[in-house]
Length: 457
Image (cartoon, rainbow, N blue to C red; front, side):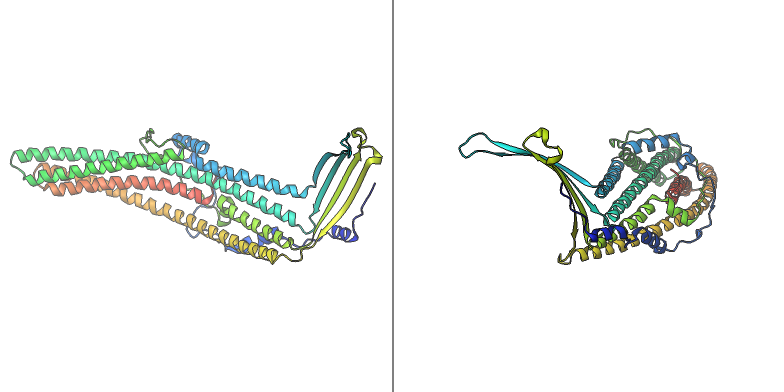
């Protein structure tokens, strides 16, 4: 049996156990320094509340919940994101194999024939070779950590895609309902215009009004009919968009509720630092920094000597039954040291590229965090603005309806012109339509705020 002993240099390197790079600690420090995080939001908001609340449940809308569940199960973009996540974890698992010794088994027979074409004979060969690269400088571990961080980023991307899909389904669902209700308002307007047309025609027939009133009424009727066609088309467009999100064929054939859900209370905003830990897209950006720092450490370690162990055990015999008997078995153990000498600067450039990508990852995280802060501040601000606008529009609608009731009576009595009556009527209709839009926008603001805060989904 033959045995090649490890060299003294190899023993020294193994016992040193030196750590040249600390990518994980460095990446954590880079995250802390990437952007200044305020202690509280600029817009005053409730900081504390029930964190266990599921935002979907606060809308108290079973139909919305049902559609979101369907979208999660059938949306094709989400399936692509899930595939990216699964692939990333498989790559991380694959990279971990480099830490484990690699073994190969070979078997064969060497035949030899006589010069005169007689019978041939040969030996049977069996060999098991095991090779193992020693991760002295942490190059392999850095590579594993890099792919693991990338997988964690892909998983966070999937969760954010899931949250975004749920939000888009909810918002599109609300748009379909609003379009349906806007169409009802326009039909009511048409009914009022038809009644006004009847009154105008009767007055005209009795010589109490001019043909101008008839023409004006017909123009307003035609405009209202065109508006109804436009709204109905928008409703079908929104319904098709919703069906695509659900993975259905877009034939605009869904049955929708006849009312918007009630507005949930504004959720507690917490503090900015908590938001950075909750939002999956920010978590993904942070994990990309970790991956970049480990990739840089991996590139730096690749410039250092590579050390590996190779062991081979095998047997040779002219009889297969005797091939593993002790006299026929040999074993070798060898160490191998490979020192990079000249590669045209490739490894040095690899380090420079990794360093650039590391800086990009930090900048990407800072921009993502800044955008997230902006989204929260904007939605907190919009909550107050929309509430005030709703109050103003409620008052405008109330006064417009009151003015129209008076104008309609005065027109019947001949005390006011038709044009004045129609203007007041359209003002009331516009106020009702705007109020409906504000109610839908308030619901959408709640959804956007939950998405911005990284709330519980």
